Image (tube, rainbow, N blue to C red; front, side):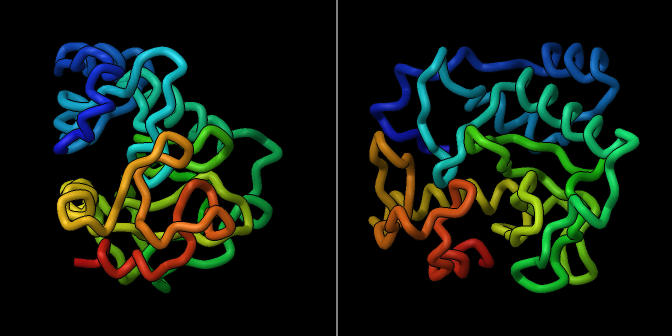
Length: 200
């Protein structure tokens, strides 16, 4: 990703394959190859710095991506968990994402600071694509499918900045210029005029 210049000083050191393998073995999970590649360039930001680089969501470090993914998997294994009370209400676009709160086929990579995440989804709905980028963590809300894969998601962010459709600010992060604070849902610009860009 072509990083916004003012953010480069806050980047963590790049992760490497050996670190990721060690983390995934520790937690008993497996990180998707495309996420390993992304983390080799953007391994989160230092300390308490909040970039909002992924449309208001914060890139997780390799360690945090694994830990949050495992934590969400543990949530759905608890006795009190039921599919009915922890499902999203609908998929946008329709039938592209499953509505379960979480799945062992999801792997999170960004966080909104509350309960919302961006994740790679390898158990899509009947009209979805394996590896698509989705929002997860919300209960009884809409599950948004942002892109068919991680590469196209990052490419659209790059193109948005280069074309002037997006801009960065320290209060809301990277966002589309038609952003209004009332449009935000889990850090996502809910004025879904922007969603078509992610469907390329």
